[in-house]
Length: 387
Image (cartoon, rainbow, N blue to C red; front, top):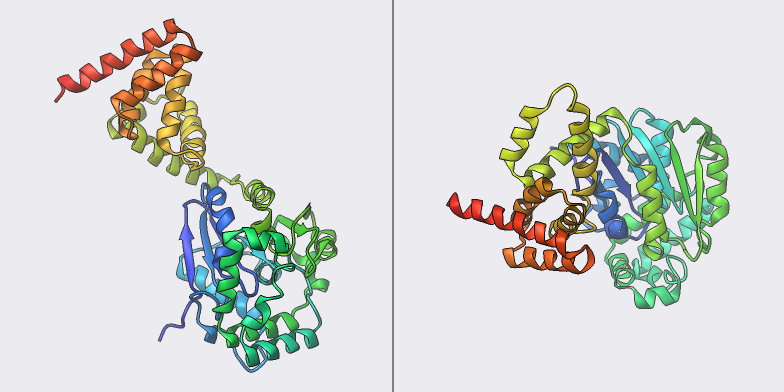
């Protein structure tokens, strides 16, 4: 019988990036980072044992659970997904799992980020006391104390995600939570930090009462080449309370840079290019590629299509409007004709394309818009004639 895996969710495509959550929080703790990180990565978010959809029985309940057990569960998940080496980011306990993997399975961890984590947490007695409290009274016993620890009380009152995470905490299996406490009580990697080989980013919340900046500095000082970032106005779940700087730091740290990652961006760019411009155009462009133009074709596929058009900050309709405007302003009529067709494929109507060109008449000049209207009309006539 196959052993159960950690419950997980996959978003995006590209080089794999595993995201580990904090004690008491579900994988939703990473929701603010998904839009930016999923642009270039295959994100695998998991729930800790007893949290979210993960079975509590993934850890022993006799007080012997360790972070090594959690790391083994992550490796089993990675193996089930066919992953070799992967990047890893973790919050608090999730970060401890990543740090353990980087020390003990260096061949699997390509790059590492630790958010509000530590090489050692409270002493074992404190974690034993918390485990006993949760076993007796349930995880709800911890809920009242999380505002002010996870994030400021004011943020907790104003954020739907903050409220949702507290609700997730109340739903955690007491045995799973307690076993994670046992694991934290036995955890101490301070004397092994110099063994970390993966490029490492350490992020701290300056207002974090659980694992404050001193924890992050200890890691950053001992891990060779580590980078330290302190986020003002952030408590323990810094990525929830201050998502913008945390997301930006993680995106920069994990930005694909290896030849294999370039291949992944090229594949994603080709898919986007085909979706917007059509298979016939892309096939023809590929067929026309020469030794002289090959590098340019690779460049626009990886950068223009693999980075810009695959970014979901703007939807493709909006990107199409921006592209029509730029091509009209610069007088690139052949490219404009191509992107008029593409705009239709992206869901713009002929009337909406006309409105974009009218806007160009105001801000780019009537002669540029006049030429653009003529180009668009020619494209429409060609489409009508082919029906």
